Amino acid sequence: MLKKILLPTDFSISSKGPMEMAIALAKNFDSEITLLHVIPGVPKSKEVLDMLKKTVRDQFTAIRKKINSSGGKTAEPVIATGNYSDQIIRHAERQDVNLILMGSGKKENTGKFKLSATTAKVIRKSNKPVWVIKREMPSGIKRICCPIDFSEPSRIALNNAIHLAREFRAELTVLNVIAPLTDAPLPPNVRLTFEQQSIAEKETFKFERFLSQFDFHDVKLCREIYQGKPYQEILKRIDVRKSDLLVMGTSGRTGLGRILIGSVTEKVINEIPCSFIILKDENVIRICIETKMHDQEANFAESQQLLSKGFAKEAIRQLRRCLNIDCSFIPAWEVMATAYEKLGHKSKAQDCRNKIKKIRERREQQQVEFDIRRRHHHPFIKG
Image (cartoon, rainbow, N blue to C red):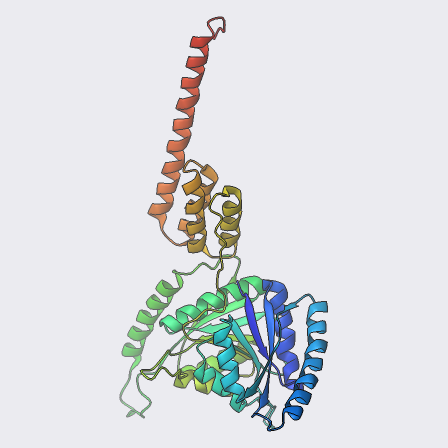
């Protein structure tokens, strides 16, 4: 589900947190980690470049040994030259990674970790999900916060937050913030209570309808709606909940093809006390299904695993492959009925059960016909 992780490293202390998280993810998702180091600029002397590359390779050897001994697995590491952020974005696209895992930067006197210029640029310009690790944060994930505004990026973010919460057995808080009607000061005799209440009721309805489209099985879920400035409320809830991870969707491409982060997202990630993932229009969790055209048992086992992980739609596609091999395979129809129920398609689930009933009736009739023919061809057999 999380096949490839790109782990840029400059071998500094800020690289420790991302590496520990990469190992944790690799264990949970059987991911492959690709290490990347960028040598800034291009040394004029070939001898200098060769010496730098040898030093980097030695560092890579030590890091790969640590990752592999911890239960992770690594791909062939990459050494690049040039601009750090540009090379990270380029190699993330070239290798089609699920995730770029980076550190946040140095800790300021205020206690906050201001994003480094490289990390900020990668978030702005890359279309790949970016997971930023704050130093001194625990690698374990116990509480996840996912703000939503019913947009497609927030739909993608919530879908990924659910899968991460399920894998790490973490509590998931889904948060919606209703912006105030106005920031302007109002005269003492003007009240917006009725209008605010009406908006709150509409937002609550939209919130519940939005969440009904997702499968939260095996996830400890908290639903929260607040009124106020979105970025302030998000930061406040993260602090109250002591969240370990924020999963947040943000705006997509402009006409120039450049990725911009939304104003709310930008304010949040500059002040957020915990690690965070920023998603645009690609998923961290992506399903890669191996099609086994003539292996019914393998396809069926795959469908059960997909459903247990919360991928009901993908499970249904895999079950259809089972039924293409044998349309009377009752276990496939039973699991498909469960998958449709999880998606909220009750009529389709009932269609599957009706199909099971017809198959069983047909089999019973065939057994009766078989018994009759057997007696007919063996007259000495008495009923």
